[in-house]
Figure 1 (cartoon, one colour):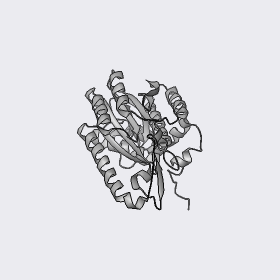
Figure 2 (cartoon, rainbow, N blue to C red):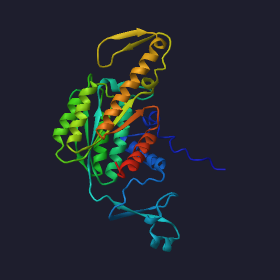
Figure 3 (tube, one colour):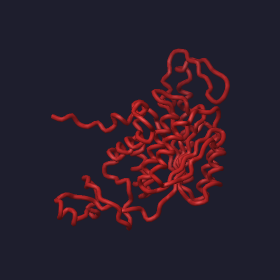
Figure 4 (spheres, helix red, strand yellow):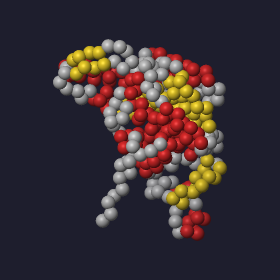
Length: 303
């Protein structure tokens, strides 16, 4: 008996580090996203015919092309382009706290996510750009829908190195002023900033009519605090270190973490911002598949 295919085997972040350039990795992740989404097509059904894809159990029968079935005896769906293209800006936090994590850092994980979404957006013939920031905007790749955009973004991501501090709020305000056409903003950050300030930045974007998604990227250890014995914790963006016995403070840490996450999620919901808590121990394609399915179910839209 043939062994069942394991679609996520090569899509774990620790493995992805070893298999090639980011633009090629992004393509592999997108293939995994397609497997993970099953019934939900990545393209929208609209008015302008684009192409066919093979029927998957659960797809709506009204989109079956019966003429093709008559010629081939196989079921294919008619796919259509969206009526209007959109522009998306990917904003990547490159501050030093994003360097934390194992087997890959939060920063590396976020790079894979950003590159994969860039590939997907360009494949839909929409435009995508990239902003890399710490306490200022380091680099900016103007949005483009050309195939070369994925390679340019991937090359820029590969150059990114963690910098000392973050200023999420300031960057969000800057992009709210920069974006003259309504579009999408996808933020990748651990959000280690003053909460009230960056929430005001998110509101600034929403007031401009932009669709905003926050990918809150945290290492599994930050979410579970599994440390034991006596540990020394060193600040990544602020000077100083603390030695303590983690078991003595774990309950208090977890309670503060829950309050912090609830505060951010509730604020995003009030502003109609998509909030995705990302645990870097999960395969990237699973995280993106779940996000895309959530988008389709809640809004009927692609990204």
